[in-house]
Amino acid sequence: MSWRRYFHRHPELSFQERETARKISHILESLGLEVRTGVAGTGVVGLLRGSRSDAAVALRADMDALPLQEATGREFASLNPGVMHACGHDAHMAMVLGAAAILAQERDRLPGAVKFIFQPGEEKPPGGAKLMIEEGVLEDPPVKAIYGLHVHSQFPPGTVAVKEGPVMAAVDNFTVRIRGRGGHGSSPHLGIDAIVVACEVVLALQTIISRSSDPLQPVVLTVGTIKGGEKENIIAGEVELSGTVRTLDSALRADIKERFEQVVTGVTSAHGATYELEYLAAYPVLYNNDRLLEILRSLDLRALGIDGLSSLPAPSMGGEDFAWYAQKVPALYLFLGARPSPGEAYNWHHPSFDIHEGVLPTGAALLAALAAETLKLSP
Ligand SMILES: [Zn+2]
Ligand SMILES: [Zn+2]
Image (cartoon, rainbow, N blue to C red; front, top):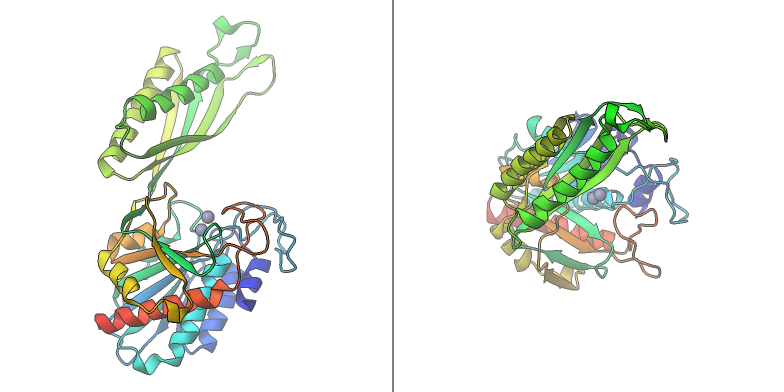
């Protein structure tokens, strides 16, 4: 609990998690682990060698906070103005450290190694996971399985929710810069109004979802920002749009990208405008591994303080860079219910987001049990 409160008090933005990294390495060293720092910038990896260490199971925590002014009013609220742990990553770090403390006690009985991955920049696509993988975090010793956990402020404390197959969507982020021709607001015929073109682009993009994609296939296209214009009597010469596309199917993902370019090309050229498009493939679809799901189901969850294990009926259209690990090794991503009480359950990324701290030891025990059991089954 004190670890979570420390991280909560000292939140840092994506890829700037320097104090967070220092605190984590200090704790891991005090537990007697081998520690590697500076992975993907501010990432930290702790390695606990068991009776053997030719293969490892990994537990991953994300480290970054969000650009939000905290409004929880808690006594351990953020000391960094405009920065807040509003996604529960403070809790994730505390739980993975807790799992390290538990497993360090039983290291001689572990038939393999456990890697504790503290990853920067989950909130900033394409995320720290990809960079950590490129810097060898899944090698030496090779990682045979990886677990990731996210607190969920809407589910009852101490419950676990998981889903087989696809859990989170693929994320593509785009920026479109539309260029028209500026001029005096009283003479539209002498300019090309980038605002009118941008408005048509926004509406036409939505028809990709409503008119040219299979209604039984989940897909989201959101334009999140629109910026342009200088003054009420100046025709805007340039407008920038940015947004995100979420899909669960790779063929559909490719189709949407193609249609996106067709729509932007068609609408802008109809008005004599031009454009520049950046279309960034941020995260792949996150798939849960069946065998790791079986390992979770085989655990004595009651003994770990878990009240129930439920199956999520549908994937989330949210994205997670944990998906990059799942592309490389068997992976399981689960949700730990942490609805605060008393008080209202605010959603992730809300300035009043909070969790029930009673779930921290439960999450730590669960992660430790998953790692130990996975090593026993596949030394
Ligand atoms: Zn988040
Ligand atoms: Zn998160």
